[in-house]
Length: 273
Image (cartoon, rainbow, N blue to C red):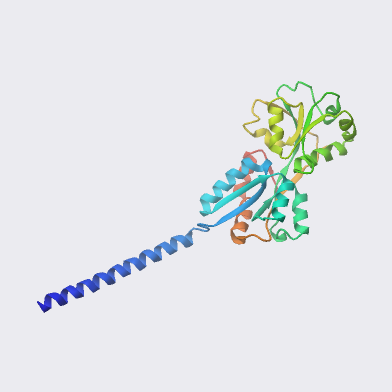
């Protein structure tokens, strides 16, 4: 009887030891799997120009699949994004023009050594399908009765560019005199709605927006000659007060990588070299 009890005790101890080994091995494997996931469970917030929404949505999805991280994106006008960066903050700053990144660098809001030029932003003239007002150039925007929509120069990059384009080509005075501008929108995306729904005769938009589904069969495009145009560069940078700088830098590098360039091109952008 004593032998039976002793054997039972030894068996229980052996099983307990075996279970402990299995548990430790499982814990070790789980730890290794967690380490292999570059950013599992981590989160970052991207402050991104609204005009970049199409390619950025695809880039974010790819990055999340690669890393296991969660990426929140705040889309808006460049001026609004700069305000968010200055107050509540974020992890990566991607405005619609370099001017806003330069301002952020001057104020110490981004890490200067993380600034990268991603792609170019090319302004163009968009008109409703069929071009009812027969607009062929910037000068045609000065004609009386032509209804123009532009971005708000104080709110978004495309608005500031539009005004600068009119001033550069000496047509701002006539456009103002004839009261051709009927609306200034806070974001670039809203400009497309005005043209696609025939609420305006012309708008200055980014060239890449002409590839969007909302544009198909609803607008015509008039290119602006390079000597008349103002082509902008879109940069990206890690916020100085990022709560997750390692992951932010990884995302910053990814959206300027060779893989990312194919996505920018897909959506009508011309990537920087």
